[in-house]
Image 1: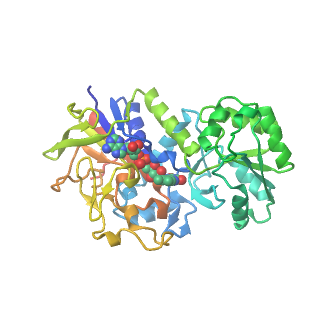
Image 2: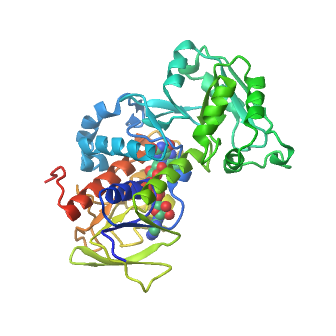
Image 3: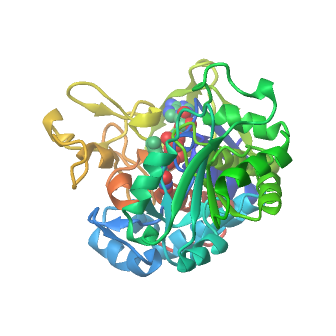
Length: 437
Ligand SMILES: Cc1cc2nc3c(=O)[nH]c(=O)nc-3n(C[C@H](O)[C@H](O)[C@H](O)COP(=O)(O)OP(=O)(O)OC[C@H]3O[C@@H](n4cnc5c(N)ncnc54)[C@H](O)[C@@H]3O)c2cc1C
């Protein structure tokens, strides 16, 4: 097996890098041990949601220059504004090639509705969650219906409605709620709270009687303008299902992100993996990279849990293993480690300094910004402090940013994945990229 590049971890960061590399003609393998954070995320892409965790950023690109200046160690500062903007356009185009349309509010952030009816600033949302029609309808103070399906246990329309009414954007909007029963006796669970989003999603993908579903929605929504329904309208046929339901009911129908498993996140995951495969990338699922040999500031080879005797060689490697959530970092009572190479980390010494006493503390928890230390090329430092020139680190494994407080989670993953991919392509093909030196 000869690869130009091996990527460890197949979340949004690893896949963005893989798509960039395979799209430019490199032979690329991604080895990924399990599900990524996408299965838990809202499926919207945050670029820069807030400054100091408090002020909502209206126009992220306009703020980025100052943000980069004020945060020189931040992964965005290592990429630079030009690469970040290119990465976002690249990402939007690549998932669109798989018919997944990401909508932005021009260069401005927009708000998406959370499962409990609060609003969160974000940059890209899937077209079923936010689009021009929904945005424009808000100027007319629309009547809104939030509709659930009986048996779906992870959504609470009444609570969402009460919370939405507290927000000034929804002042003057009438909000009604209700739930429908799926047509076809067999489709409905025996236990009234048995469904998770993925169960309902499978039913939608199996072509249920959409006419009946549409008429049940209409019987509850009445003269509403906008109908919100939890995001479970299919993993494969969602574009067609939404189009049919919109045509049959005449409503502006949109999807509301749910608690995990997140169908919106899974759609993104599917689109990225399909795009990567279409370009010729190899994805090895269900195996974990457990170590590698570092010699003279280079990774020589890596090996995995399932095949510890097989050495995998490539001129370039990418570490996209995520944060604590995905096993990209592990901790015990005293220390934190990067488990594959034992890379140098940036984190506060003393466990008492890893978190704040209040769960919803306005300054968030320090552990969220712990991670691998890198230089501006995203090259990390090995156990003895040597810079590793052919290993690039991307996404949530990186230090010096707080995805929750800043609203930069997927944005950092996409930008650093793209920046690492750009540099690898340059190395392997001699193409010119922005000079960082
Ligand atoms: C609950 C939750 C909700 C979020 N909501 C949002 C949101 O609404 N908007 C937003 O922009 N961001 C959101 N984020 C942040 C964003 O989703 C993450 O920052 C981003 O997905 C991180 O991507 P990643 O590729 O770096 O890592 P991950 O998605 O964590 O992927 C890492 C992958 O590496 C694999 N892996 C780990 N170790 C190894 C190994 N040794 N060998 C092989 N494979 C390995 C893991 O199995 C996993 O598949 C959310 C995050 C979480 C956790």
